[in-house]
Amino acid sequence: METFATYLIYIHATLGSIAFIAGFIAIIAKKGNTTHKKSGIVFYYAMLAAALSALVIAVLPKHESPFLFTIGLFSSYFIITGYRALRFKKPNPRLIVDKIISVLMILTGIVMILYPLISTGKINTVLGIFGTLGIIFAIRDLLLFKNAKKLRKSWLKLHIGKMLGGYISAVTAFIVVNQFIPGIAGWLVPSVFGAAYMNYWFWKLNKK
Image 1: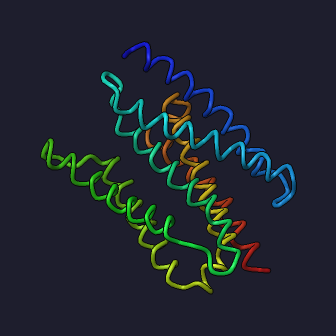
Image 2 (image 1 turned 90 degrees about the horizontal axis):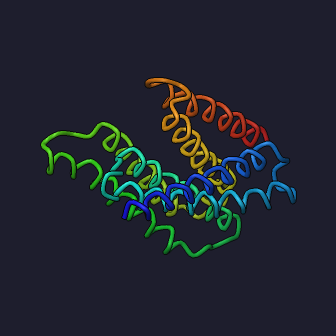
């Protein structure tokens, strides 16, 4: 089992590095051009595989990590929903899969909050915060799915916001695990810069 875990960690690290580089290229490339699209696809598949492998690693014996599990879960949620947001620019997209994803995120968020409380009698701060955020994001998506006109109008914001959310999660994990920035700052710095860049793009879109 330990050998399996070691190989899986190497695979996870490799995929994460590929996603990190491809995501950065997609961010700096002109939106919509060939470079952006190709690097975005590489980022999506590499990040998804890295996130799913993180979920497995985080529950293996001697490697249990609520932090890694949470990052893997949120990265998966953000990039899957961000990629699927591209479909919303077309009229009347089928939303059954998107609704299922949102419902699963809500249920997972509830489990993330309640499981530590039931099993240990204490609230896990990391799981509690991210579980709550997951529930909020998923409910917001479900409400948006009820308004086809607004959904179609918002597809680009959803795509940019969700994909950047997945990238921020990956960068946060990289910084925290390797302790490049100590303490709570390691959690906050990627989010601050990511949110600033995200708001810049939302501002540009609102001007149009």
